[in-house]
Length: 547
Image (cartoon, rainbow, N blue to C red; front, side, top):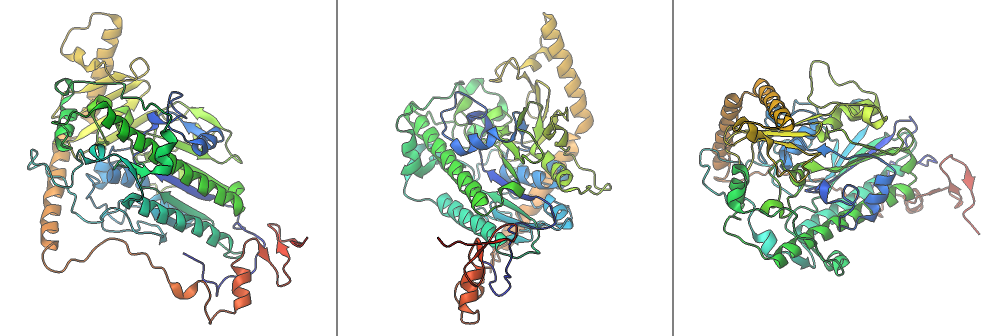
């Protein structure tokens, strides 16, 4: 939104004068880390802006989401708490407004917190953000609640095969409409910030794009980037009958069990996804260029990540909702050369860790009476040894009981009362093909197999101590039933939406007779000029702009 031009005063300082760094947090939706060139040298995806940013940043090579679904992942990310603690069970879950988010902590330090784009809030549409620049692309109500009481029923809003069957180029799409608004509002916000005056607060702007989330379609500009690329087929092709039981449920939930996609259909879907990632890369470039043009680069911490990944046909699976790497692993970069030298971090971290990390960055201690699950990544940022354990929890589509993950060192452990457990050594088995949990049923023969059994038994004991699966199941069922009842009632009669409706006051922008015209034009210009047309630079020194 444009600034209130009645309140703008002359200033030669484009950034806040208190010394706190600004924060720009860029999120992409459904962006799979293993598919990106900065993690995979064989990647076919063209991301020049992201690659350059990665070279200048602290790059986390093993970052995970707290839940492989949009809303639970995001709710945990903003609170630093795992989904089961805050009731973030699925994409229609409402977390309590009394739970502090990183936006609340930032505001206690004087930051102006703004959100442009998707966050998938249900109910409360702000959760600590002072300003929300756009509405959300997804509904803020209970309409998408999962139903464990009828596990065989496929709800009409679930994913289906259309994203793959209809993949290809487009002239425009719902998602492009949305992200273009997000980009306009975000860049305008940055320009408004530098024109605000000398006593401005530092900003913490979250820009959350919905791309490259399915449907798999993108404009020809980005589709054509891959004219000369023979899109690689998935590395892991498996018969449906050989999949683990959760993956089999996902195929049925997403209406994919009866589908046998041709190689061409798979390549078209992946090509559109690649093009969508390149579109996100362009958006990143636009934001970074705006920071540069507005003189904000030097004083802004840049964080880049995502909410979860996309299987993109690996194992025959699409979208997210599983704990395999392409679904649960996310990109994560932190850029602030003033404080952190570029380097790579190989330890396991989670976007759950962002809240305590942000608190450390701005010098705020999280409330001691509100213990959080996230662990600060400051040691990692400083090149030291840090936390190496990640927990994740999932009770969304495709589940019938809670499904949990522990990631530590080379190991990934997955457990659910409805399914056989899984254990993978990702150092030796990056494609997750050798389930070492089998040694609970068959006698190990080698020392390596005996070690795997011992590791598995250790994780089994840890999971049993950490999660009360029966209690969690009852909590999830109660929440689902309550939300279905409320939602069915709210659909009767007049419907009052909970979706955010951003205020855009056209009376206080552009040319209005209540604002002196010369002052308006001069104060809305950046860099600033005085009444004689001389530019006022960052240090407040007047220099001639005339040749």
